[in-house]
Image 1 (cartoon, rainbow, N blue to C red):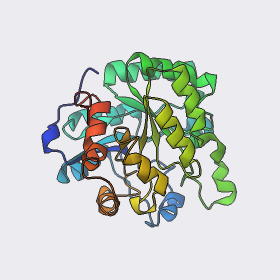
Image 2: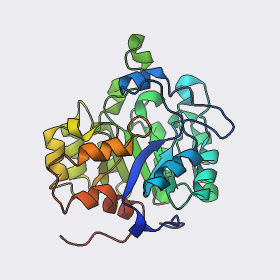
Image 3: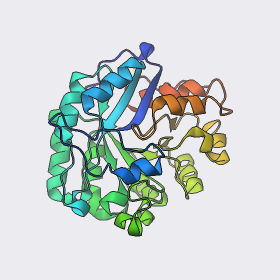
Length: 299
């Protein structure tokens, strides 16, 4: 990939591939980051960070972070706050620790495709976050394929939320959020139709963990991030595969701010992960996938 962010990999202890920004530097906040999410994760009121505040947080910890919002305008009627441009522009000011992704609701159609191309060529985003539940679409819906074409054309990453979500949890009717959209098997079609597209399945994919492991072992460019759950709750088969068949394709992610990297890493230390695999998960796999490091060396 081109335009690699300037950062000193040797000085970083980890790369967190899954963090959210919920507050604009103009003071606006993302309404989707509501109390239901805070209650779901047991943290009370949802903390809201701007891009610059998030950069400071990760710099203190000698970590880098992929940062993004979620554009669900087709379902909410509201624009994402902060917008993709703000996230990308501020991330560029903190390129020692931040890597900007964008989010385009597939419901935007051709306008969204044009916006994606502009975000890549003019703002240097490195990937795109999709949230099928809040965007109300199946990842293998052909209406989304023009977006994937642009992402694949530029050699970037498509990151898909998978499994249950805290958005709408506990509210009547789950806040209208339908869980069916986030089965990883729908992403398997995308991996077939876009064989050169790098894909991340975000989160332990409850209740479809085995499906996610199957897709990631079968499709060479599909990865799994471990965000959104404390590692002490990871299902045994996820730990087993992370230690073996998927040791080069599993990525540290926190889902900050709902889970802090400090808590995640503390709980991860208690898992029976092989010593030679831990640095792969914490940094090396992400560095390679993001184009910050060379290809993996044979074990």
